[in-house]
Image (tube, rainbow, N blue to C red; front, side, top):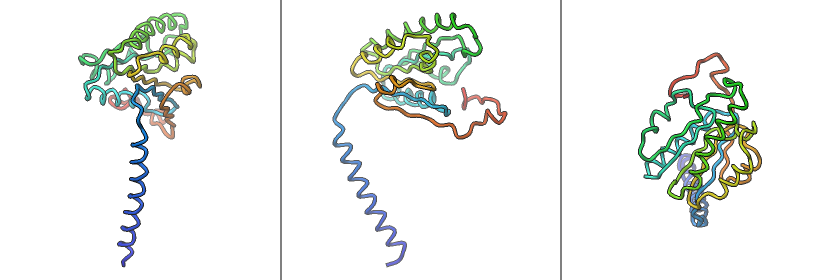
Length: 202
């Protein structure tokens, strides 16, 4: 038997074992519920991942909503794509980044106004997916009451999915979440003097 044939046999046996393992996990997964996902970390791609799931959800005919904290003054590609989509509600805090406003009190007022829209959506049983983009900053800076936010997410309709994005997600968010992904930054073009790029960064 040649080395290639031996390698092919080993590969087939390994894939058979892998299939058995995966099939067993699929069979054991019997719970059907709305998920709470947290996308955090310093790496690029948190919001992009959330909007990828938005695209999937829209493709499946689900009703979706997006609440964007911090952002709002840039014309982003995701907003241009989904803003007028009949299955998507889009809300932005529309104050820009906190380092631009430099006004904590006005940021708090804007955050609370935006959260009032989010909290309504988190009570709407007809809303299948709610994305709370950059919400973590509102909690880190103390703009929103943490307990109120956590309770709203915890007490949402059973089948509703919620995605929270942003750096430095607190331990309470992480403990409450079903799925947590932390994106690490290995390298970023911006720190080498490259301008943010349309379609890649916004």
